[in-house]
Amino acid sequence: MPALRQRTEGVMAKLMLEQVDIDRPALVDGKAQRLRVLSAVSFSVPAGGRLAVFGPSGSGKTSLLRLLNRLDEPAGGRVLLDGEDLRGLDAVAVRRRVGLVFQQPFLFDQTVEGNLGYPLKLMHRELPRETAASLLAEFGLGEEVLDRRGDQLSGGQGQRVAVARALTLGPEVLALDEPTSALDAESARLLLEALMRRNAAGLTVIVVTHDRALLEQLDCPVLAVENGQATYLHAAGDMAPTPPRPSKAGLLLDAG
Amino acid sequence: MGDAVINIHYWDLAIAAVLVLASMVVSWRLQLGLERDLVWGAVRSFVQLALVGFVLGWLIKHAHWYLTLPALALMLGVAVHTAAGRVKEPLARKGWVFTVALVTGSLLVLAFVTGVVLRLPNWYDPQYVLPLAGMIIGNAMNAATLAVGRFAGDLERRRNEVETALSLGATALQAVHPIRRDALRTAIIPAVNGMLIVGVVSLPGMMTGQIIAGQNPAQAVLYQVVVMYMITAAASLTSVIALAVAVRQCFTSAQQLVTTTQ
Figure 1 (tube, rainbow over the protein chains, first blue to last red):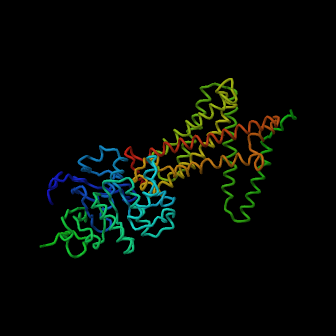
Figure 2: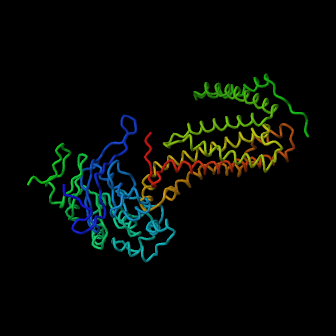
Figure 3: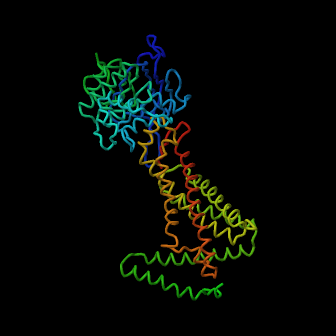
């Protein structure tokens, strides 16, 4: 496990998890319980960096993501944003700095323009139409999409709108849960390109995925999640060539 | 004033029981399987109302605040218990939600009607307070049950929507706004509909009772109007309070939606 310091090569960690334990509520024999999904997770992401969270479904990747914008609290350990424990920060303020896009994002019963303007509307501010249009253009969507409603969009368009919506407040970090899993190749490409452009401009990006092809394209450190443990790997190439199997040994590191 | 009221005696009631018998025949012939429920309903309604009549009569004869108040407390207690039992959707501290809502909402409306509208010389006069309280609490309970049930159910179904809103920077109140709105409409619309049809489709009990007892219809309907306004206010106020308390049970102080697994 690489040593994690607040400052890596002079760069302050944007997001850091220290010995985080993650529980998930579950019904066991009809009684409400909390199941330990991940133990002692530790990693850091520098500002403007990228991190992929990779693992089989059910391994706790989504639960981990939900800690980053305080939708849930960790059962143990700390989540730090710019060195500050999230629990000491106002939850709404955290969510404006750390955006989260769900696997099946929900679009409100409004036009796309209404959806994009929603986060600002919460703060009693308006999103100018030109800004909305240029935001859509980043994701390869034309201005005419602004007047469409959620159910008139294809899956790929809806996903891109949801990601664009999460960016309207200018967050410092964007976390995405399986952003391309339900997308056609074209939409996935457009989405990834937009994300990489934003990342180059300073947005810290965290992507949960089980798609190895996406891992290759992201070309960044990977947090490999399996069997209740998370292993930090500097590059996707450090991973075993075969897809991870749910084995006791959980061998994810290349033997060499 | 009309002629003296025609009183009903117990053997008249036995004759009226033929009506229940007629329903039972319908149920039996058409194989509805409701005969037992009909008998049980007829017996229970008779027993419960006989008891209430006896108690009310006694309370009116002995009009004291220390008797009226416990009667009110009992009515509220039963209403809270019934409401909490009827809401099957998951929600933490249902009893607390309904207690705050029913006590606050009902008593406020009751105080207004007895103190400001009727200007009763004695606020605890059981002849007025208890029947009015009965109507207020009954309707408040129905409205609150509808509101809370709808809210809790929708909140579970629309989790994704709520957490999306939270993730985009909404507070708990902002995130549940559309759900709260739908739940309140569900609770208040029946009261509004009641006002729209009263006198045209339905001739409700308050005025019919007074008319049969010999009251001038022009005066009886005034009472009915007051009752309609009172019921609507009770429904609205109690539902709003119930949801305000319910929202607080569903979110942590860090604007996180709690998971309810019962």
